Length: 628
Ligand code: FEO
Ligand code: CA
Ligand code: CA
Image (cartoon, rainbow, N blue to C red; front, side):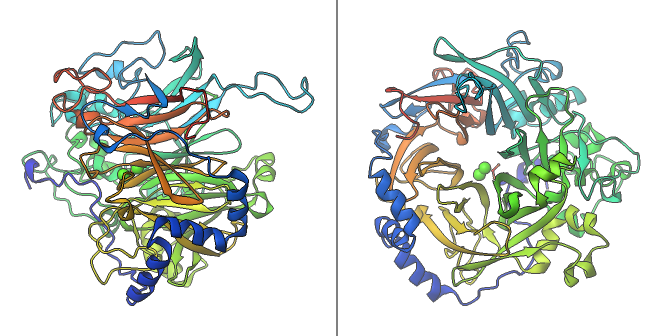
């Protein structure tokens, strides 16, 4: 293959397993679809009737959850961003701005040293960690006033192409590779609202974590042979940090998604970089490694990323994990929590389950890949008091969705005979989680992206699309073949620590076509405590719409309003709010796809100025709750 022939689609399925447990579900899903989504309004009322808690919630709230004026379809295109007339927005921390005000200013293209001290590219999942409460509860007799104007923003820098970063497709030296590596990873930024405007401030805990930052491993895979390289290099870096999570003990979880794309073996002419042949192993195939990767060509100048280099064998197994970062300690070494499995991690939604155990819901974003949950072995507060991370000792499960609306969590442990027959130990099993999940018969999904938990406790997952699901490959949870527009599934996981659940489909994006609230490719997802569902899209939208942020209602998915549309060529992703919910931070990722003739965002369109990933600060003009 020559460079021009490289498939740019990052998500070609690498699941060769034959987990299609429902070969005969067509009639089932057709009847389900009629009941649930023949009309979205019917779907909502049907669900509420079947769920008394939801009906009660709906009654309490009345119909006034979402009242803003939506952006009309005709206003949602073009090179600039648009927002509802009831809202306003501010741009914060564009790619290349200094991490702290005293740092190096943006210039294009950046150099490696500056980029390590600047905001990265490809803004994605993020969490706002408020500064300590303004008033302590001792003073106010138990009442605490959170800080809504100051805190640490931990933000993922998922990816930026060589073209957008360097102005060329192939780096020409190790310094340009380092620039790219430094533009990936995570930023922890100190921000404060001063005079009504959010801005960066100096902090000893502001930091960039990138592909060459020290990291350490913890949990069952730490110290195992599967992450040792023959040359003994120390573990470094995190990459393709997609969605995110947070723990109740105040740490940030960043999720490594398409890590396979940064490894390779060949130059742009298809010739091996090293004088050696390379054929992918079974495991490398299952994780999608190839000779070009996503054409970053780091492997031309950095041997660590050359799959054919015998000195760096297993380096690729050091990626694909969830990484825990302390946003309030700039000296902490990020920890890769291996008990949570290795796959293309999209997000990590934390909940406390029965017995106060830590539960983390996670998606593996690839066509025909799976939904997982992790359950800690004990009360997470007790574990922490004993010096044990709740994310190090526990059980990883993968989901099987039955066509009758029930589901099972299948444990991925050496107690399962079929897994004991395949793997030598739990470390090997977790390093190759996808293969273990194939073996136990998990349900192949339509690209699980973000998850969020509604006020009723149900877990919602976006399934962004799957154009390669063919007739005959349907299962009840993924009933459309093909599924170009995506859907949102939800499940009731009871006390969260058990092995059974019940599920339903919240909405099909296809059912919004031919309406004012049309959207496709749901990706980012956040549900607030009142039941507003924030949906962010990543994919070609109908009607010339750019990617968008919409708001709907857990009780009434037919009530969808368009709150924000990004500039042409971008994806909308990332969502977090201070405790008062009067501000929302979202991200515009890869505006113009890095091409200034498409968009110059956040600069006004002039066809020349470099577009830059950026965070958007959204506020309601009347000071109201975001989404109202
Ligand atoms: Fe990084 Fe699956 O989105
Ligand atoms: Ca995503
Ligand atoms: Ca996506």
